[in-house]
Image (spheres, rainbow, N blue to C red):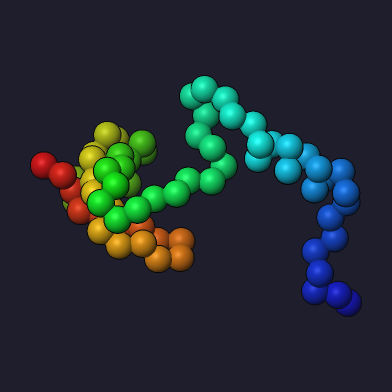
Length: 73
C-alpha cells in the first residue's frame, strides 16, 4: 500500500480556487502573525483563567501550531 494521499485533480483545483477568494467578513486562508501583534479570542476558551470572548492578547512567541500570548489589561 502507498502512503501517498490520493487526490483527484478536481479536488486540487477546488482548494486552489477557494484559497484565492478574498471576501469581506471572511478571513484569508493564510494568516501571518508577528511577535507583538494584538489578537483577540473569538470563542470562550478557559473562563476561570480569563480567556473568554473578546479577550485581547499580545503575541509573545510563535511555534508550529502554537501561539503564546499574554493578556492585555
